[in-house]
Length: 116
Image 1 (cartoon, rainbow, N blue to C red):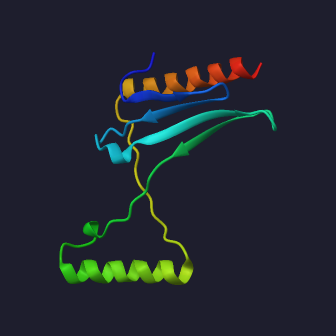
Image 2: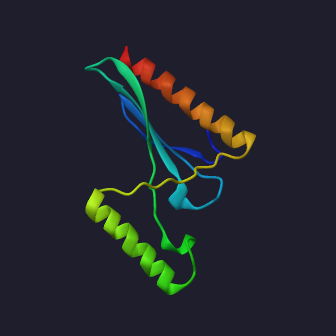
């Protein structure tokens, strides 16, 4: 059974959804995972959903530097159409890792059972 920092949020015949908490404790860092069976191509897929943020507060504390950073990012989006960002997702303890693995195994077994 899953409990510590991993929870099941939805359960359907062909899909199961989990939320895995980031070890940092901030809810905005959580990652949603779905295990889904697609009948048309007869395959099980695992999809990770994560919000990514860009924040000018990490560059410098001075107002003018932050404003110039925002301007630079805005121009990049305007002329290229995208901005590249990354964010960490931390699974820190053995219990957290074990619960994540348990969620994946339980979800996979449920999907396999329902596809038959």
